[in-house]
Amino acid sequence: MKTKVTFADTTKIFTTFSSDEYDRTSIDHVLYRKAYNRVSDEEWNNMYITLDLYKLYDMKTHKDSFHNNLYHAKKLVNFN
Figure 1 (cartoon, rainbow, N blue to C red):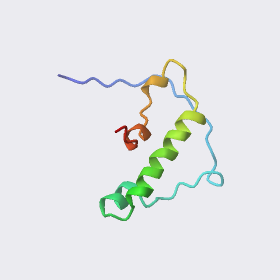
Figure 2 (cartoon, helix red, strand yellow):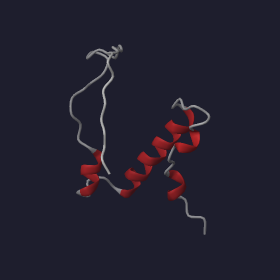
Figure 3 (cartoon, helix red, strand yellow):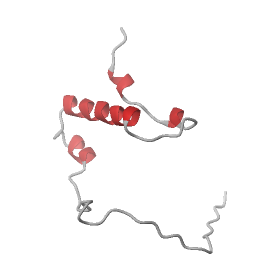
């Protein structure tokens, strides 16, 4: 299967946050820390719950796209 890439003939410029408003420095990646057991299971689960709460209440999602979101908290609940 061949892939074809094309580029638009026009350029769009969007405004973004200034460096004073948004820190672009590198971070200690949480997956790296998890891989070397530097994040406890409880901390890991709390991150998933925090992410899910953000997705549910703060993230703007079009109503027709809501079903595309992946929610992790349901994996943390034992239904036995």
